[in-house]
Amino acid sequence: MFNLCLQNLRQAYLSGELQVRKLFAELLIQAEQQHEYKAWITLLTMEQLEPYFGALDSADINQLPLYGAPFAIKDNIDLAGVPTTAACEQFRYIPEQSAEVVKNLIAAGAIPLGKSNMDQFATGLVGTRSPWGQAKNVFNKDYISGGSSSGSAIATALGQVSFALGTDTAGSGRVPAAFNNLIGLKPTKGLISTRGVVPACRSLDAVSIFALNCEDAAQVFDIAANYDKHDAYARENTLTNSSRFFSASSKQSLEKNANQGTATKTSFRFAIPQKLNFFGDDECEALFEQSVARLQELGGELTRIDFEPFVKAALLLYEGPWVAERWLATVGSNRVKLDAMLTEIQSIIGGGNQALATEVFAAQYQLAEYKRLCDERISDVDFVLTPTTPTQFTRAEIDAEPIKNNSILGTYTNFMNLLDYSAVAVPVGACKNKVHWGVTLFSYAFNDIKLLNIGAQLQRNLNLSMGATGHALPESSHSGKMHTASPLYAQAKQSKTIDVIVCGAHLSGQALNWQLIERGASIKQRGTSAAAYKLWALRDGKRPAMTRDERNGKKIEIEVWSVPEENFGSFVDGIPAPLGIGKVETSDGLWLSGFICEHSGLEGARDITDFGGWRAWLEYKKQNQN
Image (tube, rainbow, N blue to C red; front, side, top):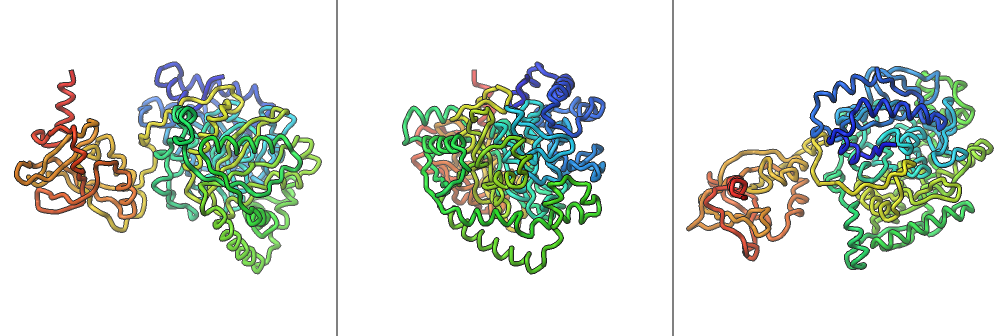
């Protein structure tokens, strides 16, 4: 079985070890051979895949971060020219356009292998509610895969795809991730467009990501979370919630922590519920306790919180009026009749049009109160740790009590989107039945990358293999370099800007210019400073410094960049000593914010004023390096 994690796949393409068409031909054979797991509703043929192959033939792999990466699409997410069923034959239609998130991934070089199986209309956490067959756990086929994004999890865990798209309104991405040894990112609502996604509860829906490791999840998230101005529920991402800030997965840093003691460990605070219910499952409880201990070993400070308002909020999802959204998206759309649905789905959706307007508002008031209480509970921690599910079930147990046992699975997932939190499910081990289990880290909205950072540390500390592939986690390859297909923060609204003078690594094309680009900054002018400055190459050789010297100074090459006011603080905060921000004079007499240097920072620095600028100095070094 080929290792499809994104780092390994890219290396194989670059080395010539692997060709796209050959890989996909083999993956289609593999998917057919593993048909008994019921991962797919529609697999594409090589003929259908050829346009995607052709688009890559003339492409530059260095410009496509997901070049040739196979992925699965849950069958409630549109792929142009391929039927969308939401696991209901009567609902079938063929979209002319792909969902916005699918377009973004394909534009980055990814190729869809097909449309994956799911619980009908994304209503269920089990994976057994599909006319295309009950999905099976990849480690023990007697057990459920989890759902509703069952096929997406199975295809990723079996190594048929590098990653997959699911949806997660009540846990539909996190639950199957836990049972199949995967990372399951339920991102902040609105960051990934839901345009082109069949709604479950439109006001709560989130497109989720299944990945083999946290680094892959961060990379896919960065590309998928592209602001969609045509999506009424879309939200713009924050500056620090991008893969640029994914860095905590370094194996070397963890080893350093382990060898040097607590003083060098990552410091964070996390909470767990004061009371947890595992419904008598001692094995899952032991795995949870192990996870708590591992996080403490990594430098986490533990506290406990009253979880009652979270539990009460969770009950609103199916016992409150939000079920009306499921009715509206299906029967209310006049695209499918109730009797065309599976029995369990009918029982859930059937009464969805009965809620009174007064009941809807009363539930919203109650949710607002729960939100206030829950936000207070987590205000002084970095994240909360819970079980993803309290326990595991066989397919026979779900068949015997489909509603009750499905509800148990949602104990720690159903509240998440109602309360507007971000979450990531992380695998932590297997039970005696060989079925895997996991925990969930959650926090406020826009903490997706922060959670992936901690999740990566936990995943590496436990040293589990990826999915059911048997492949070990890769060495961290995150370079801190923004991919060209990543959304730029220039899309953010910019009301007011601050002009900043740069003279070194932040110049256009230089190593740190991305720090301006990602903040939505734009270049305003190129020129020189007043003839009153000295330029120094600092001792580290990587940065210059300007100092004012009216007697011996000269003109120095500079650029003026306009930085959005709301992003200026984070830019300044990232400037390391001995540099800082002060006022610098331009050749036309303007005094603007710019880089200055503490006098002590010039110790060991080289005077490079006569070169007239940082670029000229770098060129001189290049020419004379031998």
